[in-house]
Length: 137
Image (cartoon, rainbow, N blue to C red; front, top):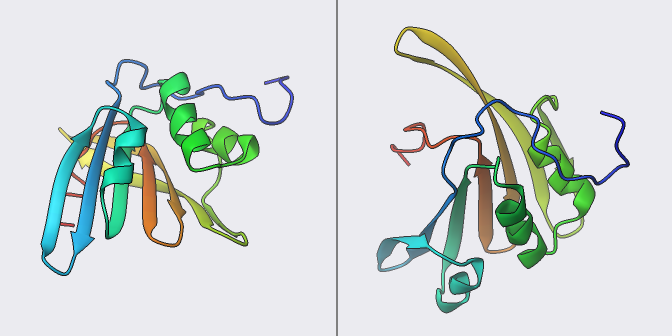
């Protein structure tokens, strides 16, 4: 794409997907599910947190999530570049993985780019589109 490393540009086809952040908080008492308006709102929750970010075509908003968690521009670039191969990177303070979700939807084969960052008490997933793939979780 002739851009310097760390350039944040979405390369996928799902450009109309709305941006959303959904937080699941797991505690001994149960699970709370919350729609977040701002990434800073995550600070009020205790327990293991899973933040599901949908709509990675919204580069400024998704980049803001990356800045909040102090994720490097190179890692964020891999989130936006949907043609990355599946892989797992083990870093000092987090795990980063890229996956391809392949499923049937209305008799059409769909391939979606999914990235995950696992930290001490937080999992952040980045999806191109909101799908029902995580409903059983």
